[in-house]
Every structure is written in structure tokens, then in C-alpha cells.
Image 1 (spheres, one colour):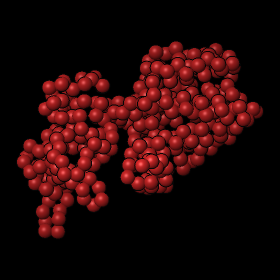
Image 2 (cartoon, helix red, strand yellow):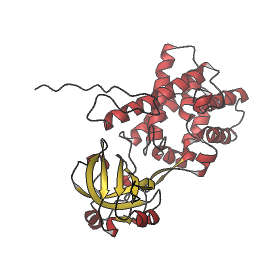
Image 3 (cartoon, helix red, strand yellow):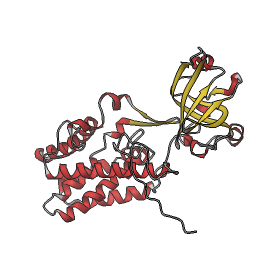
Image 4 (tube, helix red, strand yellow):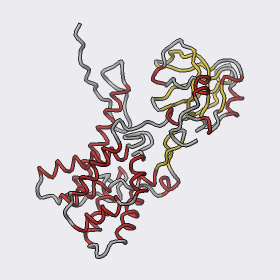
Length: 338
């Protein structure tokens, strides 16, 4: 089954896969398809074993506890499996959790060909074709002939375009969904385009090109699987900064007389776009364009995380502490009249 294929309707009816974590309320009996993100076999004070699970779909995660078949299900399932779980939703320890039903068939490992990927992979809320058309519009306006040819080399590659349209920009943090990389890239380009209107001594063509290419290495970092976004071996071992420089050099080799210094400045922008050594950049930004790119990239990533948190938190004006933002955030809520 290809990514994005729907469940057969009769199977969807049997398994009731239309339920999501975000829909759950206390005291309801559920039967759901969820991914196992963690599991831990534990023991109570009186030596009774229980299995603690973290289960997720694209809308969030929920804890599940199995008091009845802990050892059996600990052997049966692995982290990363998609399971069908039956049980009751309860409110415990200030959060919802699923208490797994008593019978041995309350947890079942779902086969890969049964998995509906739409349960686990989100889509960009924006139209992918329109976003790419807008990004291509920025590329077409680049005047520097060397940079224009370089961008044309990328944008004439159908495989590159299709991967850019579908790739996420992360696994769990900002823009972690299909089309997320294109959405993030376009936003960064828009930001630097605005910055160039304020700081007219910036090299606009260089900055626009660097913004378009800064995260291309993420095409090598992530893959969309039926169970969600996964990091590739290359993403784990090499990373998108190094992969991005490799991809840039591969394209430049196909061009005649590309200026060496121009290549070096583009490489510097990719290498330094995380801004600080502790954030993963091998070197800090040392040109005006590289510095502007770093701030634009960081701004868009953080704003996306703010929006993500605002959409999840419903019953408070303050979020929980967010590790990525390193803070709790205040969520402005409009008071309803009447």
C-alpha cells in the first residue's frame, strides 16, 4: 500500500480508525489504531507487573496502561509498531490515559499493509502547488546569472521538485508534516525578501538563493513511512547541513565557470544557518547574508512551534514547558461575548 492510500471502507468500519487522540474524552470505551512510541514493563509495590505505553497519532500522544496482560504484550509489541488497542479512557494524574481491556486480544499488532498513513502523517495546511509556484517565482527573479543558473539546475529536476513538495522539515518539532519543508523554505524566503527592503546593502540575489537552498539536505534526512516521519540512516549519521553542501557542490559541478568565492559564500550560509555552535552549526554566521538567513530561519521555526502549541492547548492560557522554545508560552484567547 502506498503512502496516503486510504483504508478499505469495510476495514475502517471494523477498526473504527476515524478516532484520534485529540478527540478522546474521559469515561468512553475506545478501539483505536495508534503507534507505540515507548513501552516500559514496571512493577507495583506488591510486585504486580504492568505495562506502560506511550501511544501516538498525528494529533498527539496518550499514555496507556495494561494491568492484565503486561508480560504477554511486552513480548508481543515493539516500539514503532502500530497497534489496535481496546480499553477505557480515564483521567488520571492530571491527564487522559487508556486503561487497556482485560482480554488477551485487547492489543493487536497491525500489519503494515493495513496501516492508513493519514492517521500518522499530517499535511501542510497550505496548497503545495501554490507554494511551489511562489517559491519558483522568487527563483526566477534572481538576476545574478550564476545563481539563476544554479537555481534552474535544481528546479529543472523533477525528482528534486517532487521530493521538495512532499518532504517534512522535521520529525517532531517545526513543520513536521508532508509539505513542511516547502512551507518553511517559502516562509524563510519571504522573510529575507522583506529584510532586503530594510537593509539595502544586503546582496538580495545571494540571500534569496541561500534561503531557497539552506535546508535542501533535509531531503536526505527524512522519509515518510506509513507509520509517520522517520529519520534516514544518512540523516542520523551525516545530517542535513553536510548533505546540503554535498547537494550544492554536485549541482555546481554541472555548471561552467561558477565563481569559487560565490560557491564558498553559499556553502557558508548552509553551514552556519543554525547560528550557534551549540545549535548544530559547525561555524557561526560571518557574512551579513548568513546572519540574516540564520535569524529568518530561526524566526520561522519558532513561530511555527508557537502556532503548533496554540492549536494543542485548549483549557489554559499557559502552555506546558516546551523544550524546543525553552519556555512556557502565553496563549492569547479572545473573550466571547455573552
